[in-house]
Amino acid sequence: MEAFGKADTAGLQAYADELRATFMRLQDKGIELHTRAKSIQVTEKSRDGLVSVTVGARGELIRLDIDPRIYRRPDARALADTIVSTTQRAAAVARERIIEIFEPLIPADQMKTHLDGDLESLMAQLADQMGGRR
Image (cartoon, rainbow, N blue to C red; front, side, top):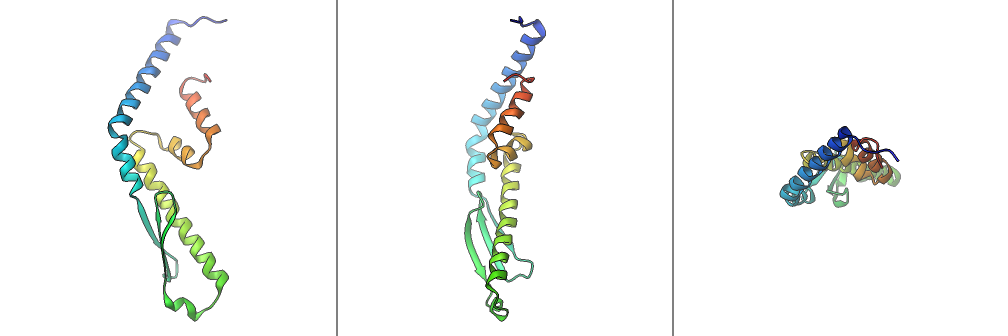
């Protein structure tokens, strides 16, 4: 078994101090940032302006408005595709706003990984921060 040297111990102490400082910042600002993030709503219009969607912080559909002029070209598949693509664009904007809100506390790449639900990549990022230790 390899013994830790002074450099290893100092590195671990520095990392522990950084984690503690991050935890303290999260504790101080976390509730405020969480409240701001939960209140996010994004509205996007379709490229033709006939469909408007509003999504919440998690990309959930909150409101859907369809201009009556859409019925001039009755095409259910095109309408469905327009609703989906407009909702996806709005959800992407909401996601970016979440990342911006938390960026003072959580690096953007880690937040993106977390929002993607990619636990394996998140753990790898954290391991890299710890100098490759798992």
